[in-house]
Length: 272
Image (cartoon, rainbow, N blue to C red; front, side, top):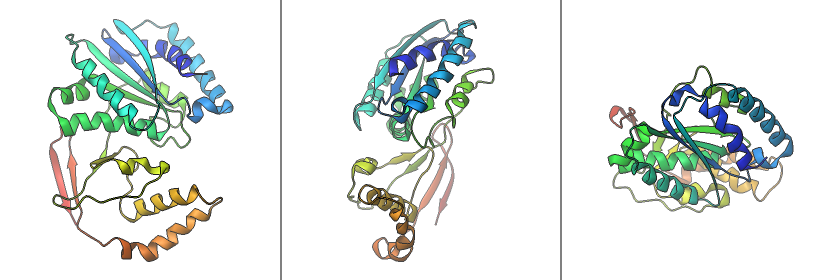
């Protein structure tokens, strides 16, 4: 199964979803063809079986949306997907119809969904303006579990995720964690490898499933570096080493935690 096959299977399922009843729906599938959900035969075969069953069942149902388009974008390299999402939002802003809406379907690992969501939330809360309103009110994202861990998908299995488009479908806001340096602080520098390219981006950083901060982030960073050079479970030693040496390398400071509502308004603050 390739990315084009995926879009063909998805089309009837999405068309039959009541969320976009009488709407003009544009679907964009952002897929990583190198993800395990495509390349590992046993998983790909299982995915295709689920997709085929869901697609055939949906084809027997009436089409809910008034008009429908679907296209596929295959990820190429880190950073390119964010640029594509930005261009998609600009394209959507040119629409003059109130009935046009957009669904972004990610089919990859946590890295793919992270990059797509980071691009959207950056537009919605860091840039603001008309693009912000568009992202909040006209764009929906569905994250398919096509990676290995799939912590950031909308369901642990593909069957579970696609069921969100069926009888009990509803819109929901996605929680996110935004990490930034304190105002006036010197921007830190990092040594990073291909395993943690997110560190090469300037703050703020976003997390949508797991946010590692402080010693937890240090352990994650060092285990990722160790895994790429040493086999087995040797990387686990960093749990013990970090407890002994983390405080010498990184001094404790003050952290400020703010909670925001869906409109970006601060609803609570905590400093410690």
